[in-house]
Length: 363
Image (tube, rainbow, N blue to C red):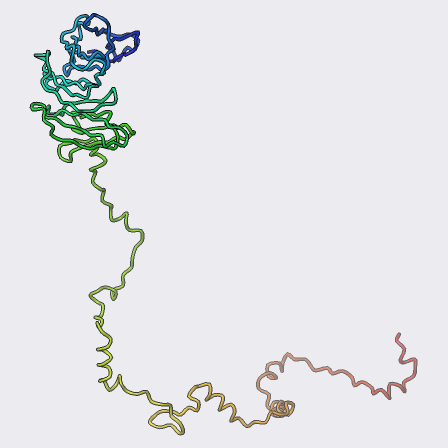
């Protein structure tokens, strides 16, 4: 089965609506030529397929709505010459999901619905819906109970809104302020049940219902936060000593003042420190003059009365005993030590002068 794509051309030379096979871009399938009441060709400003794909509808610049059978491109099957004000450029046509109602958004600030079984006059008309753009949309809700369109505002004059009408009574049900700019395009997706809106300042918004909407924006907006694994959060191992746990920890006093009062009543804790012993020791305590070990050692060294004023006498004091009773060094070298050889005694200076001159000479 061929897939058709409906396009509109508004050039002065063409003024046609054509269908194309998407598998063959070089040749169109059918050509539809909208004409005015006088038989002149008019410019189509919007077009759409019916839900079953059998009908093609076009809104024209003269305010008319013309509908053709897809297989019959010569004569219109339905048409209404004065659907909107001539020259207002209808911006959007859309069929209901049951195929019995056609909605049209006109450049004359109106929104109308048409019964396909009686296409001579509109079923319902809503006025006061300002539209400054030639592509302002209108669309049915997925359950075919509501009809939605956007409104335009001048810069700094308010906010663009989405307006919802009941399809049967055509009473305004909801009105949502979108942004401080005009609502240019809008789409109510039938499967996602979400509304996409584009505004004149380049802002795009998506409206959804947390319960009724499916997928779409809910995949990223309502996505539950992923729980982190415990192994990923631990960066290092901790060692806890047993006494650091609360069950082994000693209970601390809430107030130190009460503890100090109890310590004053205890004879051991409140005992005054004993002063150092002066004079002879008593009660097993040794008196230390000065109170420190260093002072005790200095005092004992000072009590040594040995006279070391003459170092030679102090050294030779033990020479006689060492020669008579050698103990440390001499016994170790008695077998290996050679006989000592001493130098000859040198002559005195007077005897050296008496020697003949030839003995003094060096050979």
